[in-house]
Length: 241
Length: 241
Image: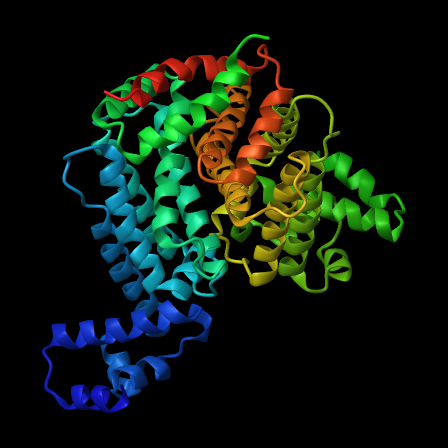
């Protein structure tokens, strides 16, 4: 890595190339340790360049570099959410979650430091970046549900599930990435279905969305199996005694 | 308020009384604005004492006062979770949520500043206080579910729901406390039931807990109505076509 990095350092890079090389180095450092343990010297070393060069590109120092790295991670994360509006919704959600969980897996420590908000360099600007990603996720989901102006309840259901996914990601990292990622993904999809279905009981808008969404699922999809599993449990409890 | 406060200031208070008077004043200031807008002068004024007196009790200044106020709020919050192990679980959860939501209502701005983590005085110590409250909430829930050593999935379900409740509280504050608090409480209880029931499909431990819990509910409880609402939706989707 060091010799690679030094070789790279002596190539003539364009401003854009250099900037993106520094961001890559920063992102990989921030990804594997909490921000307070990352130094500009460390970034310079990882990129095989001098500290003054890092300062030339990021005169705001570590804070600016951190925000730029965070912004670039946020863009990468938002790309995970793009999914063609085609086929059963649980499949689409599953594929987006696969990409999201691969991102969490790749950036593990940095991801938790970021979301835990315990970082020494957290500011309202960095919070805004993270909130922007959450908002983008909610918009993608609502658009797949075919909703343009969601009411409070539907919006709350979707945002609650997104927060729950963040919590699950952090727990998953804490638990040494157990259960296996495919199980976690299926489980998150099922939790989404459950939250929507429960929301449908009180909210006609959610009920319409759920009816539409379930009609696109085939009984062979995981959601069919889920429903067949839970129906007996519920049937017993719902029956007047 | 000012004249009250001045009267109080001239009474002779014991060390404990004085400390708790200062904490009350600080808590009420931190509760209504973000920590970066609270000053020691403001706390002294609200308590009707001099700034040096505040320093005598909290020589660490604003950071120490903030942590002490946070700790005292955390204790108040944890008291919300105490609930006798008696009757249907959804009723118990509903009562605990009523107390929790009353707390959120009372401390609105301070509550969001705290949870958003955007505070300038956030440190790993303050995060630990907030995490401690989350852990206490999870332990209370698991003990009502009769589980002493929960497996990963059950633990994840409970922790995800707790995070989702935090998210819902913040959204509720953002939306000018709409829907009314009773509706929000019922909705959160229903989301809890939904997450547990969905978790039961894949996890025998969760399934056993759900079976036990549902057996304690009577069909007249809200959970009975919820189930009667969602069964037709699910029945349609679960039927092989």
